[in-house]
Image 1: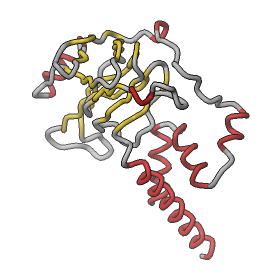
Image 2: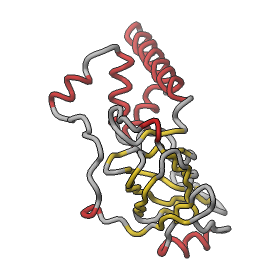
Image 3: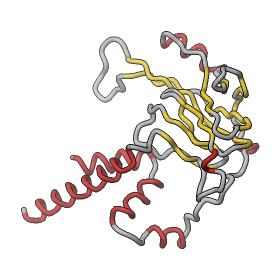
Image 4: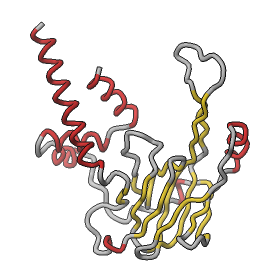
Length: 217
């Protein structure tokens, strides 16, 4: 009984720490920096606006998929110059009729990974533009040949996407911290909250969902 109560308290405290960590990031989660470190030209960064249907996974070789929900509209800060953005297009449509127990209540329609490369001007704002289906049938029909374009603030097309080939991907502009023993040792230092943030940033989407189920059950 005592052990059960201690476990419940620990879960509550851990869940609270997670909420605080997420709350601290809430003000900046809509704008994602796509580089490591503090580059000198970060203050001149351009902005790429991505709606909820566009799931950006990598920018200049660096993974940027560390969010709990994958349908957020996000702004991505890009360093001036050549940028490579890898993304997929994803829409969700409700199923009609009776849904069996354990069966998903929605249809998920997702494209193969796409890549777009363009030169970003300092302080400029860009956005994705693509065909928006009005039904699931239209979405399924267009997904095989899906592509998007990047538009400037004035509506000028600056690039169009194509199928992503990882073998042709660019290297990250800045080095990514090592994930080996040295990197693990660095992550183990600091407060419990800092450690939790570090582990959360490297967890897969399935691991995050499993943790949240455990923390709030």
